[in-house]
Image (cartoon, rainbow, N blue to C red):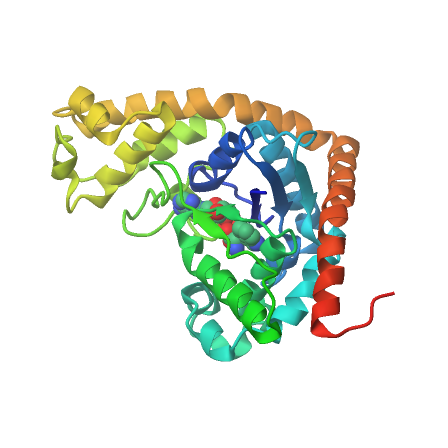
Length: 332
Ligand code: AMP
Ligand code: TRP
């Protein structure tokens, strides 16, 4: 049986990259798959989180998933720390994964920065917990943005090594689903850097909570070059900022880049930015409004997450019991 698992970190500043690279695809996959979606709060604390803010960010992320179209009745939506199987399986995987594998992870190198000795042990083991998230549900497909591809490969390596070490055919090797025209949305300030929650400049990203005026101002100020738009995709070569804005427009309109350029080719950026603002505001406003409403309904969000955790537990616990059996632990 095919099963989807995916997650996002409750670290605030949910942006258009998260939406186009991940959440929008999750919404579409609900039609054809059984889906498990997770607010990965255990992953969030691999770097310092203020407890008050973390609590609020967990609820905000759940609200934004529901507002974007995740159906918590038909599918499973929960937060990671409420289901103990994640942490338990992660420990077992820490003993399967090799230090050499983790040393190759580019995200750790980026996040740890120069002062690697001072990074948390959790940040280093992050991909092993991510493998546990996915494999605790024996998920077969994992929709993510391009930046998570390497972590998915590590998950597959862990699944294969576990099966080999114990001589079992137990875990599937999950496939990444890197979908849609915007798998890597770039910063508005620098077309070669990805749009990111942690960028110090808020002008670099379009947040899901930004109002129409803010979105409009950020797009107007977005970095571009001096040339008008080309009339075909080949003309975007070497113009990362132009490519990014056109890609965002195409993704939101569900059009190909060529179709966008055949309509807008030859226009100056000032005109295209206005068109882009209209599309961004038009597509995001209904989600933002619903998100704001849901976010204030704390009892509703908490009850969704608690019911989701029960359902997640019901899938993961029997799998974890079998893992313990395989490893040689005693089950109660
Ligand atoms: P995070 O917020 O880092 O937990 O990421 C949540 C999801 O959004 C993951 O599937 C990421 O791959 C995806 N994502 C994050 N940033 C971007 C981006 N700039 N473009 C496309 N997808 C992204
Ligand atoms: N590491 C992912 C990110 O930063 C979030 C994540 C945690 C995840 N566990 C996962 C994504 C399992 C997919 C599947 O985006």
